[in-house]
Length: 420
Image (cartoon, rainbow, N blue to C red):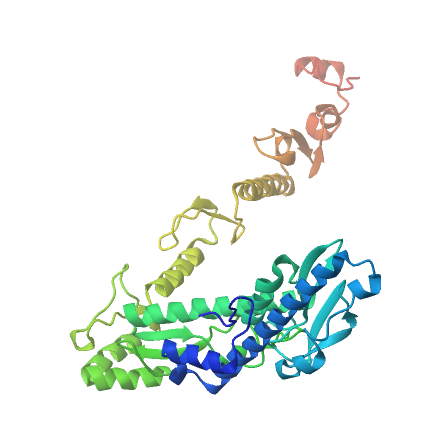
């Protein structure tokens, strides 16, 4: 049912409105507040009717030569006196045919809004400016002025924020309702009424814990689709009352089991005495459902493999690839490749340094790998040399001064040695 009533551009009288409501059979169900809103919107529609009549009169006077006369509003059609009962007045700064506007007598009115029209070059343009986030008021304005129903940026932001909150509340309420119908056993979050307690209906936006879209945080416990309380103790009492002492004792045994009990694989624990309720435990702690249990099991698998160097999928973690290197998930193939390469180079250089410290002498070939690992070096007296010529000049390279006979006997030809 629409909040605003129009009939042949004339607003219903109060008596007609009541007759219509009575004819629809809904008057007895309306609250006083709803009746007040309907009367307010009826006043807005009466104001629209007066504006239509005024605009029609102004358009007829366009042919007049007298500029003052053609721009003058006819007080017999509309006036502050006639508007008084509608809680509107004529804007003294917009009281001509060229630009005419009505404003609410109460600046804090959440239903009524500035409304009017402009006539430029014989063309009529209806205008309106909603001043609150009341959606019915905005709809009424848009029905009057269409695209020319303009909200200021603060109001647009407020409307968007309030819609975000309502969408979050609807999602929360729907999920809660569906859960009660499909399961309704255990813990669930429902919408916290405090999350919308202090939301503003007029700019500016009030963002606070009492006006937030993050209101799906009121924890409750239900049994067989009926809320039994807000604590685990409330749930246990209801569980005991329905299924008896044996059910609770069986569940408690799982909580107290040593070593701490974890459901095997993905099989729930059930007890005849507990009816259809499924129980999920992870290391002695009861989880809300299979989804939460899987999440904890996935975390165990991650911790089990975090110190390895490998790319793998993990049980309970879906099809996602994990890229373990340096005790963390590198998140992508490129980052994992870089990590492995850096580790390989670090080990290669560490092995070379160990050889130097252990007085390795001679040539040490490079090995396949990243960075400096591919370099060939020579070592002598715990020094690393980068060329064979430099190595030959050391004692390790057998380049001490030798007699020609010694050199000839030991076939030193080709070495850079000084034979004297």
